Length: 527
Image (tube, rainbow, N blue to C red; front, side):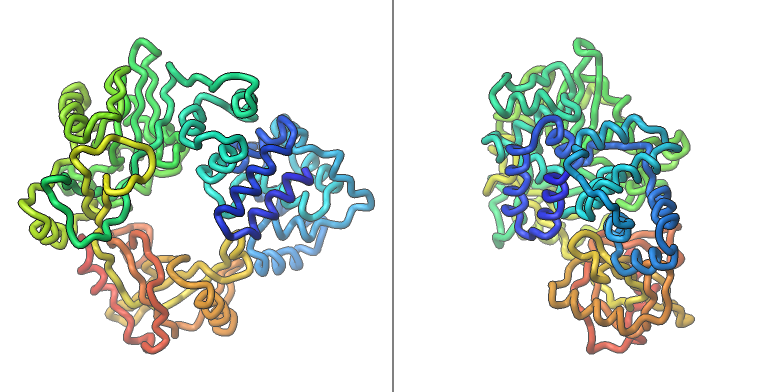
């Protein structure tokens, strides 16, 4: 457990991407099996320990220290695992060498929910603060150490001189603690063979358009739809007719969208945008806010599927049956996709239309006038481009529409996570009604520099007027210029509005709070 806890500490306090990759790679080479396999599962979000709940951990620490002290400490620290690890009563005999990572995982997997607190407490009594922190993070999931699943896989690949895209392709055919993966990485066996399973292929990605123009004789233009990019993979009847849906990060999201997975019975791999049909738009795509109602759900009710019917707007085809089309130019793949469409359920799949523009100037005018709720911008795809993993220069470009902005007033602040757990970095902001009431319209935790974060943190601490657990209410005096991609109706918020991708564009210390924007002004921005 000591080596894993040191890895987590290093990841929390290392800011550079290359530094994090080195830490992961060094651990993967040095740690024994199956510890490193369970560590890789934890780092990639594939370790699910069902018996331990956050509420039980809160009960455990309140039984051992003054509950008021715990609540005050958690408010200050901002992270449950870190607070409990630091407050846990000192044990007379700390010997973390007796508890291995695999041993801890196997004990927690085997224990019942009723017995989990005693089992967890027994192990924590033998660990120091860093070990307790690592154990609690393992037990509750969501490590929050500043890395993504892709970065963890990249670190693993770097450790053994592998291509991370090769790792991605075999990933979903394996399960923790990944013995076959390490056997391949260290040369004891060949590459695991995912054939016959609906496995993930790395996506082709786009660079932001920075040039003043491109020649539309070389590039095709289509809308960049505002859903989530997914890959639909079906094995066909010869391999059991299994279908899986993957996000851009390679996460299997089939369980959240069983209506889409069951509608695809073909054999092939398709690339498209997952969207929800609009209630009042003749079946066209609704805003991202509608799709968000279904994202991240492990189980989806029939009512949820009926209220938010999902469909996929297709962009590309990677495999048609067993035939790999990725080396073909985009124009040929597009023609193959159009032919493939005839075999698909038209209620669940449609084709992303191309934009008819005679030249780049005309395309710019079309883009400027597009404020459809589901349009995020324009994609430009070189007509002769193969489908290659990652971002390759001059092949695909994304040209997002310009953001909207509004002047809002900070209302509440909450501590961040990981390296920001000591700062108030999550801000809820609002706009005024005609009657002078300030109503929340969004929450943002990005867009500012480190220096601005320190200034904002001081403002929150010195301007607090009320506290609600970890949340502070502040004086309604600071104006933030907020940039966002779009704004939509929402029944979840008192203001009736929800912003898409809000971020802090500027701190408006020069502007009086009463001059901030009105709710009605934001409502006029709805697409």
